[in-house]
Image (tube, rainbow, N blue to C red):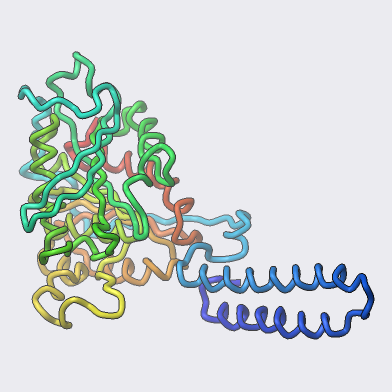
Length: 374
């Protein structure tokens, strides 16, 4: 059974009706004895299970976590196919950034947590007066004297909504060090600095565009203010071929948006179950076909501007949160934009569908994005 079809709602309604009506009917037919309560226990328990299953089916349909009973029980045998859209090669995408400067001899500010791979900062916006948190995860050996003049590529990592930068930390659902250190050790990708910004200022999901107190505040913070701060505080590659995004779900939208709209800053992005037009909820902040609405339609933008960027895109066919937008996006891509798409036949909108792809992303970055080449 497809757990993401609309028939799931009818099944949930049926199970709820059975729980309520059947439970009331059975309770009324129980013998009137002093031990009646013992008979009530299994009836109430069964009704509670049916209601819980109904609620789970509805929540799963709304969030696209599991696509089938086999997916839920871990017995499905899914497959993937790879589609390379646009036959541009990396040499074409990064034709002006092939010669990467990998040294940095500057004297930089001291780290707030010397000896730790995890550093935390509060970075101000250049639009308005807000400042938001950023977590920086350093590669192994960053502080070694032998690497004192080594410049590193930067991976901007976007979390989903709801979510927080902690999802990329060791105890999070997307532990970036555990997922990528083996690829670095195997020389699939160069050691890199991971920068994880907080994308929900004030608890509001504004699609990485708006922030409290000003239009386009968050987008500017991500594309201008954070790169400027990171460049001033860490030894990093300056060229755009040394800057890439990784994002899942709503963070996949952010990764795609920042890269496609700011190709002079970010040369690549890896997008896990993202989407390519913003989700504003019930009330969009501007009208349809307005300049802002047109600008943020990445499907139209990639067809119109054909940015010199490399994108790695993942989705699964049953994922109603991601696949329809992804499929349309892939149909509009043309060179020199380079897209490698991995479309899974099973798997939902959840971390177990995303984390196995991270080593593939690392190998792709190392092979196609010059700044991440080992």
